[in-house]
Image (tube, rainbow, N blue to C red):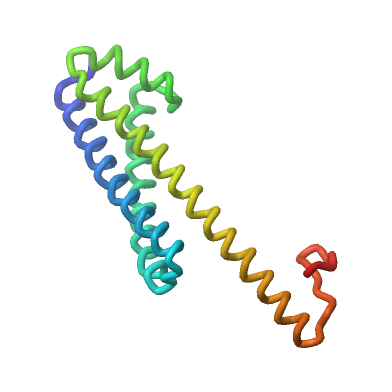
Length: 151
């Protein structure tokens, strides 16, 4: 069993990580709205906040990974779940918090993927517009990054 002091510290770290992840998700939601609305200035502002939160999440992940390594665990979802179930049987809040953290991470991953798709769509639209302008200016042959002709 984990000592109560270590368990309290571990829970506090998970709570901090949860809070930072929630803030990151809010930034991703704002980014999605800004991308849809075409508010480029807002996206620039959100990017700096997003980068700061990513750095914070990386540091928290590193601390958690180090703690798990000290416990003799490899950081795999089922191993951590089994360990939490065994070690924190009398503290179900830890497992609930861990499960919530995993759900939030999945939400962040989905939002980030959606934003990437929106950006890709905007990029394709801009490339087509650029090609059309190039053709209108009399420069008919355009080449892609691999040397292929395209419009």
